Image (tube, rainbow, N blue to C red):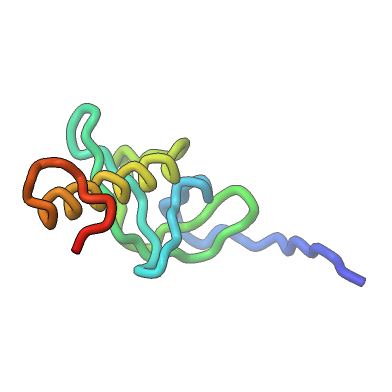
Length: 103
């Protein structure tokens, strides 16, 4: 038998919270995409605290008022990884064309 239990807790701080889909978890930890200029974003490592089905607490790495990608963060992260890998392959190949199987 399984059950889902939700326990109400008192809010003891004015924490920075984001939608859970805004936080990307990978082998290096957790990161979010922060806007650095109009239309420019960078990944930033964050430390997380409590979370529920919708929200996750950010304990460090993002300040109140910073603009963070909340919808499409996984797509942005995937595109970033793809571009980084293409640049690495182009560097290895040296001919300006991506190498499918770099040597």
